Each structure stands twice: as C-alpha cells, then as structure tokens.
Image (cartoon, rainbow over the protein chains, first blue to last red):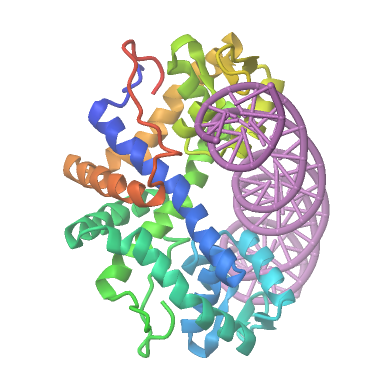
Length: 167
Length: 167
DNA sequence: GACGATTGGTTGATGCGACAACCATGACCC
DNA sequence: GGGTCATGGTTGTCGCATCAACCAATCGTC
C-alpha cells in the first residue's frame, strides 16, 4: 500500500497548526510560572477544583477535567500537597478512591493567578481571532477531540458552575 | 482594572482547543516512538534536513524550521549524532556557525518512519476534518502563529522542495 | 585596530512527563 | 464464599525540555 502524502493545501494547514500546538503550551507555562509560580497544568488542576462542589474532586474526575493521565496527576497532586495548596482525603463511598480538596491557600493562589492567565489566553488566542475564526476553531477542535480521546476518558464535559468563580 | 472573564462561547472554544493542544503532541510522540524509535521533534528535524539542499542546514535554520529554541535543538542534535543519524560539520562562511547534515543512516530512518507518521497525521487531523474545516484551521493557526512568534524566529517559511521526498 | 555589542552555539542543573510495575479495593459469578 | 477480573491510585525510573550561564566569532564604530 502506497502512502498518500500530504498535498500542498494539507501541508499548508498542518505546518502552522503543529507549530501552534508546539509553541502554545510553552507560552502559557512561561507566563504562569513567571507571574504565579505555577505550571499551566497545575493552574488547570487548581482551577477545576475551585469550581467543584466543596472544592473537592476524586482523582479520576480531576484527571478527566485536566486532560491528564492518572500517574501524571498523582505526581502533580503530591507536589501541590507539599506546597499546601491541596490536600488528599479518603473517599467515604469507595475506599479505593482518593478525594482532592483545594485548601484556602490554594484558593488564594488560583484567585491570584487567574486574571493574568485569562489575559494571556485572550492575548494569544481568544482576542487574536475574529468571532468567526473562534467558532471555526471550536468546531475543528471538537472534531479532533473525538479522534484523540474517543471515549472522553480525558475530556470530561465541563459545566460552568452556577456562581462563576475562576475560569 | 477588572478582568474580562471568558464568556460561554469563548470558553466553549478554548476548552476543546486547549485539550487538543495538550493531547496531540503525546499522540504523535507515542506513534513515532513505538514504530520508529523517534520523538516527534526528532522526526521533524530529520525530515527538514532530508529536504534541505545537500541534506544540510545551519543550527539556526533548522531550529526555525522545527519551532525550537537553540539549546533544545543542540541537545537533540547531540543525541542524534550519537546514534549516527546526523553529523555536525563546521560552516566555512561563518566560523561561529555549525552545519548539521543528515547521514545515510539518518536518511534511511526518516524514509522508513515517514509513511506511518503521515498516516497518523491523516488519521488524527487531516482526514478527520472536512476540507472547509481544514482551511479554517489553517486560517486560525496562521493568525495565532503571528502572536506566538511575531518575528518568525521559530517559524521559518517552509518551501516544498522541487523533488518531494519526505513530508 | 581596539572595544563593546550582537550573533551562533554549547553545556550543566533542575524539574516535569511517560511508562511500567505494583498494591488495594470492589464487582462478578459459579 | 473463593477465584477472577476490573477499577482507582501510587511509586520509581528514565528521558526530554527549560533556563541560565557561558564561550567564540563577527560586526560596528570611532
């Protein structure tokens, strides 16, 4: 079976797209590390906890909301726990499970980091595109996500809480 | 100054997009590592060299074509050199500069890896989208790239060589 | 033709991510 | 009510990325 190489149009889409994919994480990490001492992933974890009922989630649930594998999340939670931003508690209903709760200190950190992060997201992405471009990006991303994570293991549906707090 | 949070539409675009950005590199890496023992970044470097005149580029030029910083590229080239896929040579015109050349062994590796990689790119991205979606993705990515790398330091213009070899 | 600034590149320390191996609990089933 | 399998999570090792510091060559300039 002979390979179908990418034609010019396909290549002209692939190259800038993959460049964005490679550069964006670094850009987000850099701003958050500089201004708040957090990784983008750490921020995401804290933010998701901050919006969860009781500021608490099970490891699996948090992993799904942060597009992470369980081992990765476990390491990160350990680090955050050492810094006092988060704490592990036993889950009453299922003794295999672990709950993670955002501490008051963690809350302060994420509330403090949020404005700068949102500003960066706006500057680099949201405000850089026209509304039509943004819709198209949403459309394409949603389609791609179905391929990348077919059963949604890493992409739990996100629901904005009633009282919006941290994005 | 009060923060402009993301509204529902913006969030509905941002969340799947950032999920794709987080998941895609891992997916590409996994396929290439499994099938060819290469990182996606290593593949990209070898592929760019394979299309360069004389299969040779200066470090800076290669860095730009692979969206990489110079320190990162330097480490990777060292590893590839140890594996005999690439070799450093002095640049005659500028004695500060270093040329990198793809060896025959490196050529074989990249030619061998290319079909599987292209198949993955098609499966996960190019063939997953409609032509219209792909055009929109190209459009948005190009715009975003201008923000992420304004002076194009990391995104040299790519030109398909006369005799197409490896994408 | 010397001095400072810029460009081109390398190196070493540190920290995060991926993967495999592992342990414990719960679910199923005969 | 003891196998078996699946689920939920942790740990250790290794590899790669990042950053800061550094060295060398070149350019500009007076």
